[in-house]
Length: 230
Image 1 (cartoon, rainbow, N blue to C red):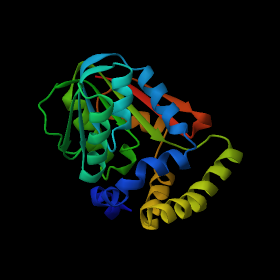
Image 2: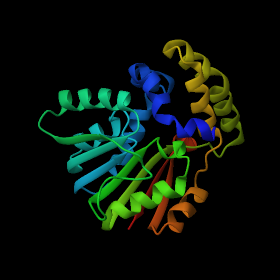
Image 3: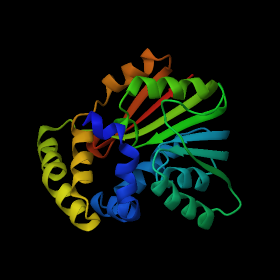
Image 4: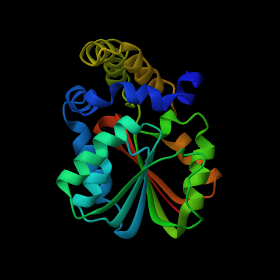
């Protein structure tokens, strides 16, 4: 899986055209509610960096809730960003939104460039989690906010069993069939199954310097919102 993470941009390029539709179908639309709640808890600021911006759903939600005057999205998948750029131009033609191909391990902006940094469903794809978190910390202003939305596992054993069944068998088959790329959806299953969450994730945030670190499980723990400050 580490090798797949190193070529994550090309993986998402392959499924970019069908990603949004499949994402909403396979999550039964709950992913929209997760983003809405995650963004609602953010403070408004002048400039936001959206790491692993993908097709820009989180960026669009921040624009909708007027959380930023300017948003810069970075990602390794040009295919995903092309979809996001088109959506942003259509929904918010006057908004100041920029998309740039860049790695989370080498964010191409000076220290303290942003009042907030966000990442939705992206950190589990980092081949070096701490390096990515360190870069997010670096580009944040003092007092700046980090908000991460990521998939996790339910605390209930009963729910976890059904969740694992869904991710291990149903999602790869349906996602693979509709996108014609089952390998990509097999990876997505493993990326969730083998990633950390909850207090363990919070400790990584503290280790790189963040303070006031909290996490909030959503939908019985299927997703988690992490908040922290510099």
